[in-house]
Length: 173
Image (cartoon, rainbow, N blue to C red; front, side, top):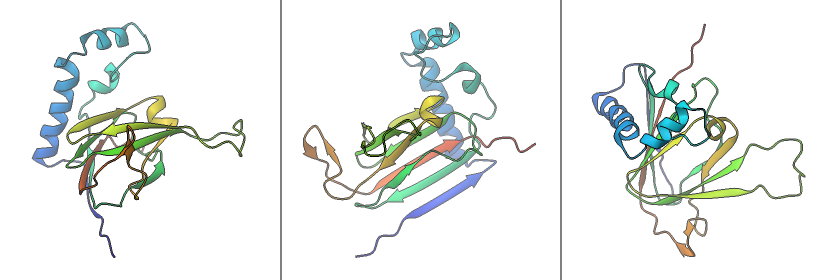
């Protein structure tokens, strides 16, 4: 059995649909039920859906990657490359899956201790925003091999899944 991962990348001027997606993300954050969280951000409190300085940058995102995953395909644990600025948005489409987050390993953890993983259920159409610690100190992965896509004791019926990731390229000067 062979699987084919289809991937498309775009840097700089994004296609119209991706610009509209970026605008929609901006509007969801601004006009959703997150007013209290945005107010907390301004006051320097921990609870924050997306920091103000990232929310108002222009453009919000200028790089995208779209991946088509077949059942059984996923993505290895990773932290997105440092060439991208803080603030990453991921939209998950077509099929549910479980994304696991684990702290970036450091020298203080005993090598014999298994890494602690935090599972997050991604349903079709959900939006993941990563910034700050979540962006830099936590790896994320999706293991879609049989037996790994379990949520609340049930295995998720795997279908094709599309992931659209939006990022901002860092300055090179």
